[in-house]
Image (tube, rainbow, N blue to C red; front, side, top):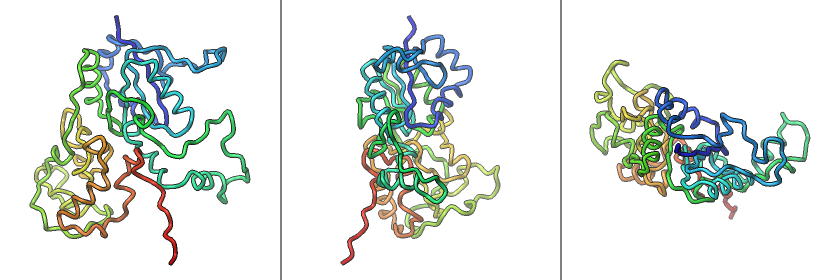
Length: 312
C-alpha cells in the first residue's frame, strides 16, 4: 500500500512546492511510493466539496501531512488544525512554516499600521472596508506552525534544498526519522579564516567581496564576515547546499542571510549574532540595521513592534 500524503500551503509563495518538483527524476521514485490525496497547489480539491455541498472543512485522512507557509489569518489556523487532526505525521516544510519566514517581518509593525499602509495611502482608493466576511480575519501576528499545532518534522529552508527534501521523504517512507543537519553554515563553509579580532566594524554589502578571480577556489577566499560583511553563517542552520555541503550563498560569494533559520529550533538569531559579534570585538553599532537579523525567523514572538520611547 502506498503512503498517503496530504499537502497544504498557507502563508507562502509556493517556493517549497517548486523545490519538491526540483527533485527531478527522483520525484518519480517518490511518486511510486506515495499517493497524494490532497495538494491544492497541483490538484483541484475543494475544502467544502467540489461543488460546495459540504458545510464544513474536509481534508482526506493521510499518513503524512506536508504544510508550507506560516499562519497569518483565521483560515490558515483552521486549515492547520484540521490537517493535524487528519494526518498521522505533520511536516513543516520551509522556513515560513518552521520560523515565520519573510512574511513574519510584518510582525515588526502593528496590524493597524499594516492595514493603513495597504488601504489608506495616496495611491489607493478611499475604502474604509478592509477585511469582511468571507475574507478571513487577519491575526495579530504571523506565526510558525508549531505555535498553533504540534509538528513532528521541521524542514527549514527558503526553499529547502531538493537533496535534503528527498533524504527526509525517503526516510519517512521507510518509517525512519530524517537525519537532518544540526551544524551551522559556518561549520560547512570552506572559506579561509585568518583569525578573530582583526575586524571592529561592519559595512553594507554594496560592493563585491575581495577574491582574486571568479575561478578562485572558495577555500582561498577570506571569510566574508572577516571582510566586514554581515554574514549570518554563525547562527544559521546548515543544509542549503544539499549533498554538495557548500552553502549556496557562499558558493555565489554572497554573505549568508539566514534562510534556514537558527541552528537550534528555539534559537534567537538576533541575540546569538549580537553575542557573536560582541565576543569578537566588533562594534554592534556598526550594524547597517537590526531587523535583518530576524529576516527569516520573526515568528515565535521574536520580532515585535517597536514601541516609541516616552518623552521625558
